Each structure stands twice: as C-alpha cells, then as structure tokens.
Image (cartoon, helix red, strand yellow):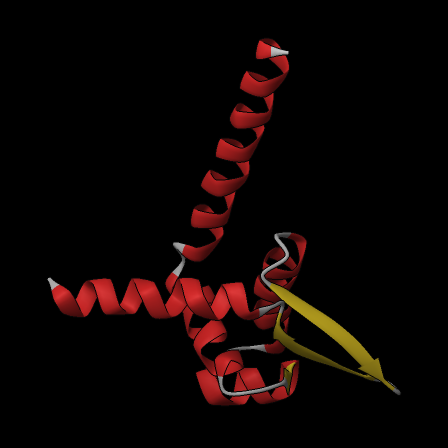
Amino acid sequence: MKGSSAMKEIDEIQKVSQLYKVLSDPTRLRILLLLKQGELNVTAIGERLLMEQSAVSHQLKLLRDSHVVRSRREGKIIYYTLDDHHVIDILNQTFEHIKHQ
C-alpha cells in the first residue's frame, strides 16, 4: 500500500507541475483572463489580443489538453471557456498573491 500511495503522490506532483508550466506562459495567461470574462471563439480572442488565429488555436490546444479550458461547437464555430471554477480560483489567488507582495 505504501508504494501505491507514493506513486499516486508522484503522479499528482507531475500533474501540478504540468499545470503550472501551462499557466506560466504570458500569452496563455492573457487568454485565460479574457475567458474569465466569458466564452469566446478563436477569432474574438485573436482580435482582442492582436494575435493570428493559428497562434491562438495552438495556445488553446495546450490549455484544453491540460483541462484548463473546454470547448463547445456551435455550427462551424468553436467557443472556449474556462474549464471550471478551480481555474478562476487559481488565477484570482495568484493575482492576489502578486498584489500582496
């Protein structure tokens, strides 16, 4: 049992580390802050951040693969939103921490 518990902890540490890697990119943070305000498609995100759609799509794929954002299709348009309230909590806590320093 002890070995199983240690392996689970190692796996969780790996996942936390990966999440922070994904959140460490300024472009991805800018996308998340936009999505914090509500659901957007790639075009809208690109326009607001002055980025090419292909670059936005690449960043969104990384965020989606890490379960930070989720998508839904409406016809030909794919809309993105934050995956759950935990993402908002992490962002809010991090920005509060920075303000506190």
